[in-house]
Length: 411
Image 1: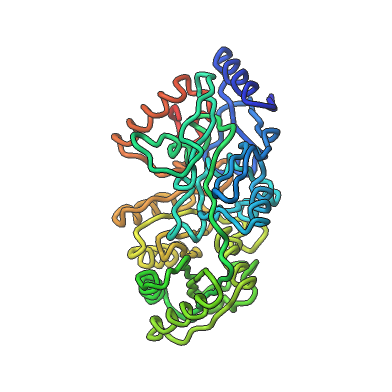
Image 2: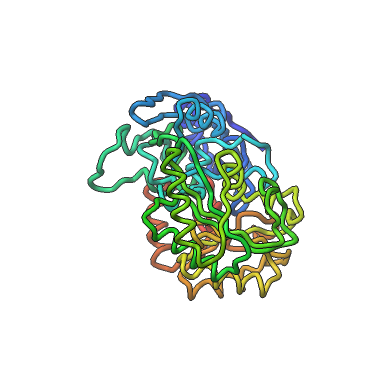
């Protein structure tokens, strides 16, 4: 396999132009931590961006950071933490779920994957925090979209297209992101023993309150899941978790108020600060389904559906497959680890999900399984045609991450 290690944007331009001339598609990677997500790419040429790892500009007082695409996310988060700031969308670290090296994911991969964590329900997703990006198109030309200030946008905010595009539209070389102040304290309200339907009602009540909840999740009772990050809980009993963040005095009052709102669901416990943060990191990274844990050989799906429908769908899916589920985003995001099967239960899962208006992405499975399935949600004819026109406008020769998202097609 030929690996081309870019040192700057000019190197990226040249690599893309050479690929066009040779009619050789490129696989775009940083440190390769997410290569096992999506369809196996149809190429032996790799464009490595890991050397583009500088923080170009950081203005804490303006809540803006500009960083090259190959910079490790963990290093950037550490820099933000030193200034009591963070990424509001709470980016997921897939290393434990996929069994890849820890702290190796890059900023470009973070944006290309678009996997936001529990705070997504309050602060928005990755695309909502991406202000601008310098990229190289499939023509081999550099371009910049968006800006470097937080402002209202008129016209098409094209940089949003890059979030969740999995490197199929352009090669990002540098991005500008807005950041947020880090909360002084956090506290999690814990309810125990609720079934999925009751937990869904409890999370809905908490989210509908005036107490500024920043996350809501539910872990059904299980004797199979791992306990990494959740060792303080007896997971043989279900737990429902409601997180609040802010200053100390506010947190105490708001958490108690949420517990009062939820009193009809049973007594509530509280966990605080570091203990609370560890629990939400485990939910963010889905460490109960870790590759090194009891369910490490099971395929894992990421399912998005209306929160009000999540409990009924997840309950039915677990019952019919013998799988395990975890609910985040107040029921709007379901992580499902399902027993191994040649199609990873894709037909059953998507057939049952369709009436709920949701979609599912296969995040972890063997290469053979991924090669045989639609890993990303199948598209209607109209959406597929629109996506193809967007793809063609960025990468007409289909050089970038060919076949990563749609099996047997040009993107």
